[in-house]
Image (tube, rainbow, N blue to C red; front, side, top):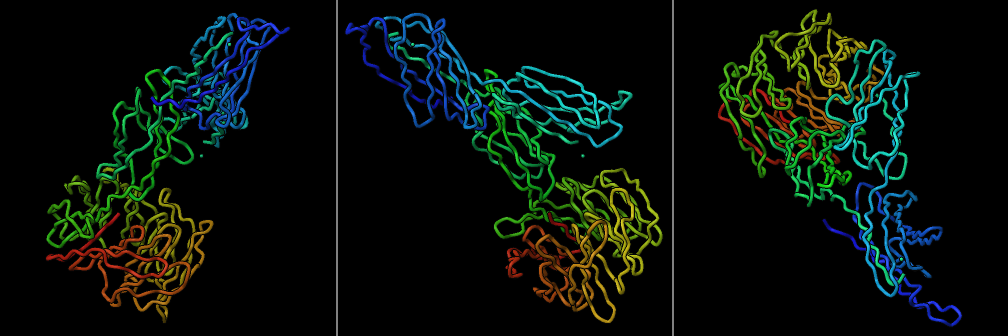
Length: 585
């Protein structure tokens, strides 16, 4: 463990009383401080050294790091108590300690003062939205202590006040009970929330659930260092976190950002961890708390952040082969391939985590996304071209009088809703086209949120908070609607040259495949389209500023300049078999 040495020294001349030298009665004090950062998120900026002997009290303050000496005069011989307080820029005492020192005439003494973290107080304000909740139980723990308290809720609120806690990272869990003492909710659902308690103060959290002669005094803080650098690597199995070992570390705690909290996900003595619970294209941030062999906590490290991105591209070919590609040095590289029975009739592909789903004319196949092994198969409605859609949780199909929802992680069962139509798409919302009526549907409850009649509506697509409608009523248009208060409001209209059959979109731009005409790019900030190709694609996928276009004989990757809507070809792969479907994430 490294130590930052701050040397406070003074050399005081002999005092003279009645012209008689008293070199054997008085002296000076040299104070030396060794300080290492611990749990506080701030560094000490000032300090106080106090000497006590009986009623005699000597005290000096100093500023850090500008001042480097503290002077005590007329220090009588005898046994003194030396107290030290180190404060941060808000005057909170974050370190404190004391020791006994005997001052001897004409001699220089040395004493070590063990300085430890000050204790912390906690106020935890809890409010709940459920009217059924009656009490809330708090469980607060770190390796040396566990605190369990229960409070009644009044007006759906309660406050926990706990004093003299160790300044450390504590693990918090809350449990809600109803009036019959039945457990209603455990928060968080997995792991625990880390509370980094700062010393010398009240830490408030609100949680809503929705020296005679020459003497030398050594003041030392023994604490754990924290992880200063970490590497986050995207693997097929998850995000691999690796870091260099920290001296004197007993174990490491890893926390992941979830909403506004740091939730503990792992504890280990090793210097690597694979986080498997990740989703493509989501940003993940991690911090470390290092616990030393003496039990001290380093406090949270600087956050380390990565976007989950394995650059997976799946393509189904007409001979039944399913291929997984990865972009490697501007080339498509096949990393897995498998001939799948029934895949020669592939219609759609969708990858979610380590699962790949393949829709044929009447079956939904479940494959392992890493090695492309078939895991299961289930019968579904016949594919008609526009009656099927995926999002990250469900597979939807619509018939003349029924909307079906299959849970991707389920066993083949489905739920239905009395919503008919001929076309649908799914993402944040489900949209169904029935004649000229466009229905906006909650994918979780299958409740119709609103219905809007759009004259000439032919095809529908949805991405995020937007619904795209291809309209043909004497002209060809793409109408873009935003979702506001569960209603569809027209945001932009684009003139198109024909039937829009392919579409993908992000918050920055969108891409259209117009039958017989080619591929077009557009932005929601203006009402113009830019043509990038005259070839009609089998499929298009946007990932960030990357555009994947699949044709029957090749796969292309373009980098898109969103500002100018210009593209540059990055990679290409040609096929000897006809390409049928694609998904990229």
